[in-house]
Image 1 (cartoon, rainbow, N blue to C red):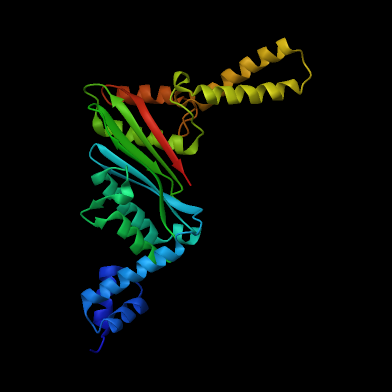
Image 2 (spheres, rainbow, N blue to C red):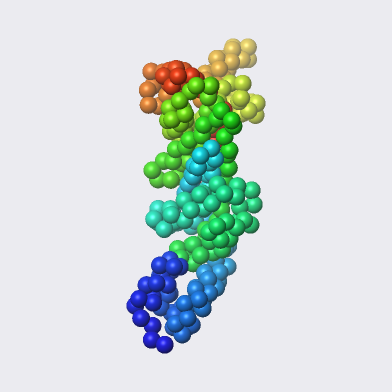
Length: 280
């Protein structure tokens, strides 16, 4: 059978494979479209098997939000060239949207209305020519009075989820805007906990040990060093606790003050329930 340009174009639109690959698949299958699709699928699997041991040091984060559910996926590839590729961005956005359907646990073993997640990765590897792996993810469902929003940096290397608890009567749209603003702040800042009460004791101990070693270099007596470290440790806690930090969009107020003002304007109030930051 003669392979026409329209046949190649149709197969390319269905599979996303390159023109030459589609032409070869149609030639190998004597123009049978289904056989050509299977040829490309097997080729993609062969490429995936060949590249599976290659290191994936680059990648991107994508977040999907639907009603009261959110999913964040961190997907790795080999080079930044692919990480910024539009096809890769579309792929990870599609996986994030599917994670809303099936959750994040054992994601690679799941199937959705778009097919098997694993097979979609195989297809992406064949299409983009690099090893691509699911690195990490989060799936959230908001509490009864919760509002979730997110922020992804323009390079897709940073993604943040934030959930706010809202008081009855609070405007949901305003709460969503506030959650997005807090997520943007977290993306730009070093945040270890919502408040001092939430700080991991291991983080505090690590910082204390660092400050003690630093202070001893001054040669001062141990009792003086202890006092120095107490003050510096308290400063550290305020610097890494979200509610105490100066709001990046308005440094004259803290996040706590921003939320109080925004909550009042929204006809109620809200507080930070949780946050999650993923980076590449």
